[in-house]
Every structure is written in structure tokens, then in C-alpha cells.
Length: 182
Image (cartoon, rainbow, N blue to C red; front, side):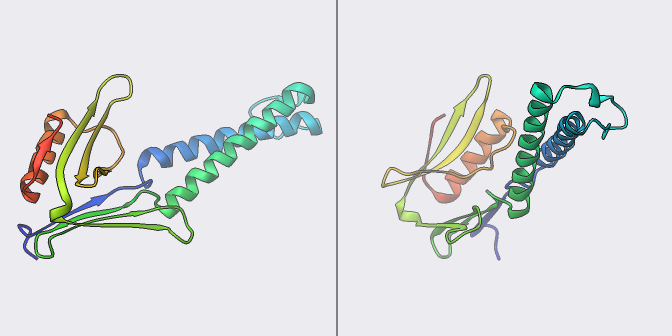
């Protein structure tokens, strides 16, 4: 199809390298803590590179086992969100049908797929939300006439200021609406 009539943007969900890294770090660390706690309980060394059976089970072993279990649970949760690709989807801006389609995947269940459709005449503007500081956020929002603000870009490391401004300007030009927030 003609790219001048349909604009399609793929949104990356939880299948990011950073999530794979955090899953691996939490899994390895959690196993280490859990094995240290179990070593103190059974008085045998389950970790070959340390001597953790000298730990007292109460209180150190219990705490180590708890932290290990918590880290393993968190790594399992992040791993599941990666498999389910939570947050992944696409944005489609179609001049032929005069529709904006926003599709995202959620957690498994009855309402796993989030599917939003707005006609062009219901779109009020494109808004650029910029928050700098310790945790910078640079978000492009689709503003509708019924006062909804729907985020359009993926959550990741913030894009460069010129890059996100250019992207927001191109989208506002494509939809033929005004650009807010600059």
C-alpha cells in the first residue's frame, strides 16, 4: 500500500534486551541467595565457590532464602511478561479508511488485546509531553475531542529531543491536526 496513505508503527513491548538482562541477573542472584539459605539449613555446601554452610539458619539463612525466593519469583514474572510480549503492538494511521487504530497486548485473559479505533474527525491534536530530570519522559499523545490522551510511543529510553519533536510534527502533519506542547 502507499505509505502516503497509511502510516504503520510497530511498538516494542517487553521483549527488550534490558528485560532479558534483568531476568538473568535476578535468576542467578536468586539461586545464589536461595542455595546459601538452604546450605545453612542442611549444613552442606550447595555453592562450590563459597562456604555458606557456616551461616546460621536463624536469622541469616531464613533471610537469604526469602530474598532468593523473591528474586526467583520476580525473574519468573518478568520472563512471563517477555513471553506474552505485554505492551507490544502497533499504531496504524489510515487515510483511506480515515481511522486511527491503536493495538496493544496485555496480560493473558479475556481482554488480552487492547484495540482502540478513532475516526480522524475525533482526533483533536497530537501532544508532546516532555518531563526532564532524574527520570525523563518524552511521550507523544493522541488527544481526542472527548479529552482522552492516548500514548503512542513505546516506553523505553527517551528519544533525543529533536527526534521526538520531528516524529510528533510528522504525525500531526499526516493527520492534519495541530501539535500541542512545544
